[in-house]
Structures are given as C-alpha cells and as structure tokens.
Image (spheres, rainbow, N blue to C red):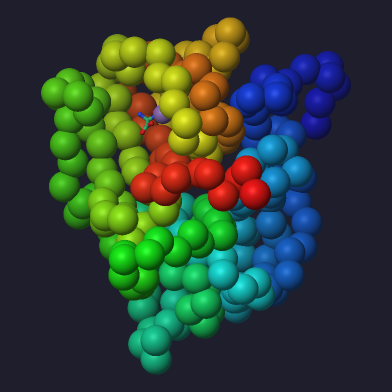
Length: 249
Ligand code: UGY
Ligand code: MN
C-alpha cells in the first residue's frame, strides 16, 4: 500500500521503468484462471506485448490470435505444455517458443508464474519458418559480450534468419557494466531476474532491482552497471533480423 504516492515507476516517450508496486492484474483472452499483468504493449508505443501470467493450479493459456508468435519463460511453479501432440513438463527457468499459428495449451500444475512475449511474426522470403523451441536456461551455453568475461550472454533462441525476435539472458558479475551507451534500432523488453544496479535510459539514471520491467524504444540510449556483491541478471527481448521498411507502407 502506498501512503506516500512515491514509486520508482517512470513512463517516458522512449522508455519505461515499471516496478512491481504499480502492477495491475486483469484477465486476457485465451488465459483462464490466470491473472495477467501487461507490462509492455502497443499502447505504450511498442511493437510487441510483454506480460506476466499468474496461473492458479489448473489455469490455462492458449493463443487466440492469428500470426502471433509466443515466447514463454517459467519464473515459478510447474506448467504442462501441450503442442504438436506431445506434453512437456516445464519448471522454473524452462522456456518455450511457439511459432505463429501453432496451436498449444499451457496448464498450471501448481501456482505458477510465467513471463510472455507475444509478437506478430514477419515471414522472410527464402527463410524457413521457425519450429517449436524448448529449453532450460541454465543448460544454454553462455558467451562473453564483446569479449568481457564479466558479462555473460545466453541466446535462448537460434541465431538465424528464420527468427525475427531474440530472447537472451545477461548475467553481470558485481561491478560489470555495458561497455558503451548502446543506441540501436532494436527495441527491448526486459525483466530483472536477480540483483540490481543503475540503468541509464535516455538522459535518466534509475536504480533497478529484481522484479522490475523496462521497455526501451528503438534508439533509446541504454547502459547498465551492476551493483552489490552478487551477480545481476536479466531476461531481455529484442526484434532482430528484418528490414523495417514495411513500417513505411
Ligand atoms: O542485446 C542487447 O542489445 C543488449 N546488450 N542490450 C542491453 O542489455 N540493454
Ligand atoms: Mn541493447
């Protein structure tokens, strides 16, 4: 309960920091016995949707829209995923990518939380359609970002032109930081998984911590420095591998 009217949440034209004290829960089509917290959406200026689903045991989720691909990352609890006639058990840190127009159903086996990224798929002439991807984040090999061993990146989706989105984790050793103020055409949706530090977004510096969500619009200058004595880690979405000239038509 806020008695002061204070929050770290900030919404600007090219970025947003959304902290858990300001989250609002609501139903969404396709999700049953599930509360949804929409963090990032076209209403904010984004070209994708990022939301948390809080599922009761037996709660379920399906795709109700055409041509929308989905990436789901389990934060907590046990979830069964039925897709292509098979049933998969997903626990914390398991993830699933469902290509557009792939019927599927998530069913919570316990109280469960997942973070979801939904995005219209942009097919590319000459590239194969992507397939279903399932994985467990700790099993994905990591590599240093730009040669910095203190900053490890895991690519959760294959790095090829079939995919028009990437979802990665980035783990910063205490004191590690991005080596430049990145300013790029890709937009981001980010969830802090652990630790915290200082995030520069545009001309603002924010303290951030586990549970926070950040939206970075295309070209939003961005930099992060990790604070504390334990590693900091975030899950980060970006759009990749496509020309954006269709936005002109
Ligand atoms: O992949 C990225 O663009 C990433 N390095 N950005 C970020 O962490 N803000
Ligand atoms: Mn970036």
